[in-house]
Image 1 (tube, rainbow, N blue to C red):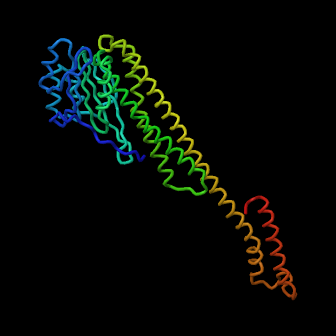
Image 2 (image 1 turned 120 degrees about the vertical axis):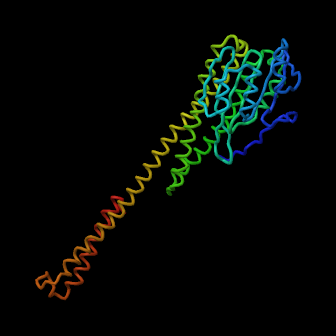
Length: 339
């Protein structure tokens, strides 16, 4: 994993580093102006206007103020403050609260974060924690299509979720390339402990990635079928498109997990076969050396009645017999491919 990280873009008009964007929009989708957190309630009192707020790791005071401006449920505010929540979608009165896992490559390693989303009839709030790219690009794309922003906050919700899911594709692609490299190394004659560690680490990251992407399918499924007062019918087909993307990523991770399991099994089998070949060769050489060792040990005993000891040709004959036995054993073991 060597994908470079991307700096988090921020809105230069914001003086608070935790507030990335805070913008008011008209009912026709046109961007009106940047506003402060304190102005949110005033904008919501104005008919035919709605607000899109983007926060990055806000503190408790900012979240409390946000809860007061939008009248958010305290349990949702508590979850957004503590982070480390499971991916989920919950309905609090007239407001949706969504938790989505995000992923980003940091220093060659996949780091995971969270995005908490509050959405009502006239507002949407995104709260980023941990590893996550800014949603400034998603906002920019939305503002280039004011006719879609005219559908209200449900379209920015689609844009943010689509941006989250699309960021998983490069990571899955990196996984696939690394897996292909490991597969080539598996079938080499040399076996490395480091390769087994890489296979294990890759499988562990794939499991974590699947835990991040799989719950999004349930979230999107609910957005496609439920919440008629909050999600516009015109936007539901777009959520179906994001659902298809999550299904593709989920299937890819499942396939790669199975391939990694097979790769680990193949590697173990190849190591076992290689060890068996070594043992066979050692056993063959041991059998080859056993014959002269046995004969030498017999004639090396301190006995007077050993056969042919008194003959002058006995010693050369024993050497010839030993060499013949060794040659015959070598030929047999060679044909059996033990040597």
